[in-house]
Length: 220
Image (cartoon, rainbow, N blue to C red; front, side, top):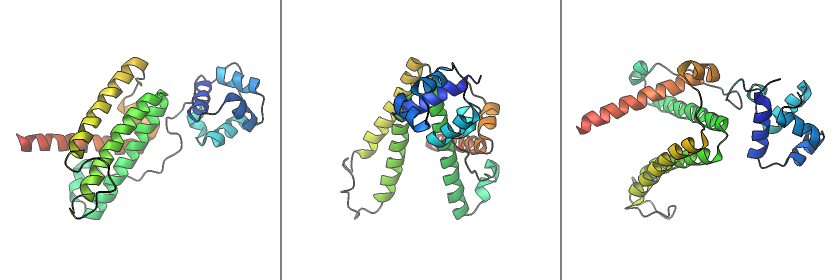
């Protein structure tokens, strides 16, 4: 019997706020039978596995714990980081976007694997603050643009958002410690889970760390 399946279908149902009674009715089975599936007391057949995948909009591999990707992700090849600076502007824009999209997908798939809503919220709040800050910088570059879209003061939004981001990062550490959400990961494991998507993550790490070193050297 697959040991991951009961845990995953229980998590997906609770994540959506669906009662066991309602889910059983949607599947066309008794609540008692669904309870046995979720507790690992009985092994389901192929028909139920396919129904569950369609119902929760995930792959069967995800339900069986064979991947942390909920659905297969179409991933474009990403050039090696050493060749990145030779690319034209439009290509750089497209690849940066792909790197961020693919890496964000990986982050959320890993968060789903932890099963922690609090951790997911903390990481989401951090990422949304980063997006908000980047967008508002672009939006406010022209000082004539109206600021009615925003509620934070134009003179203080940057420092307030940076402070909120730091607090959310601190909160992720606290939650991870309290709920013991750590996952056993390595480059090989990530490559196995995400195949081509892992190359985006690895390139993003290289780009980010190179940028940090360059910025710090410039400041120094």
